[in-house]
Length: 45
Image 1 (cartoon, rainbow, N blue to C red):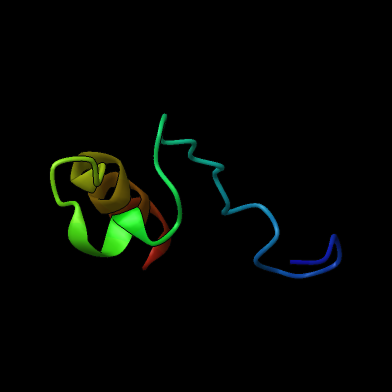
Image 2: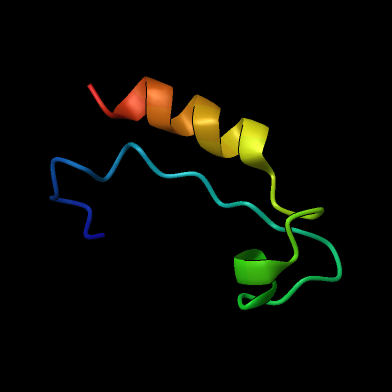
């Protein structure tokens, strides 16, 4: 997102140790569902 976007302030970088991007599709034991749910509740109004 660019700095001038109205959505620029609703981002959070999440680093999942020892995971790669595709792990988040099938390794449900490492997916941080609690953080994702918190983010959605805060930002999807």
